[in-house]
Length: 284
Image 1 (tube, rainbow, N blue to C red):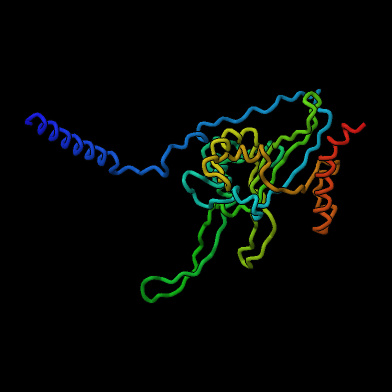
Image 2 (cartoon, rainbow, N blue to C red; image 1 turned 30 degrees about the vertical axis):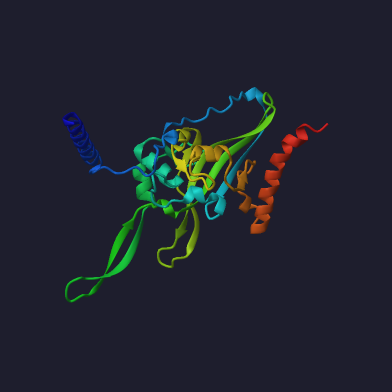
């Protein structure tokens, strides 16, 4: 009987000490947001693309497209506007990588003129004058100027530069994204009117894949199967329209079509021409 009491007392002490130690471990620590650890996206590596020889490229067409983030299908590229559960918008990921020096920013889509993080902050910050009231007597109003830095949520579009080509060795029509450029709307500080789109900087997409592959994107259908921005672009899970194709004059579509509807029809004509090339190739 005595041994039974000793064993019972020992068990009680063990439980108390265990619960105390467990509470000490949790004290001051952030509890996990879930019941298992998500490490798949963090450990991912870019999927190697098929090797292409110059001799195997039977035909190619270089185009520039616009991804409008106001379209519902493109919302995963824009949201969240603030970091949520280690998930960021595409602009937040690109801007952080440029500031850290993980990827290089360029001024042009030929990737010849570089952009430093300091130059980006200086060039794209804007000044805004506001009228404030002094907190102490005589409570008079005064104007002061605030410097507003580049904000990721201001980016409403992306431009991508890509090349479509037919690989005769694999007998497929394929595409490679070469560059991506965030675009924001310019606003007149005095009138508040729109002054058109403003391109910020270009990023060489093959280099950015090493960063985008570890950045998580929201999946509307399954929270357990999140994908990365690299997956999103490789699977072409976005909507876009063409604003330029390679041409002898190096001009945009809106430079030879003024009407907006004509521009969209011309963009669709170019897209159809690319799609039909593979079909026409196998027609006997």
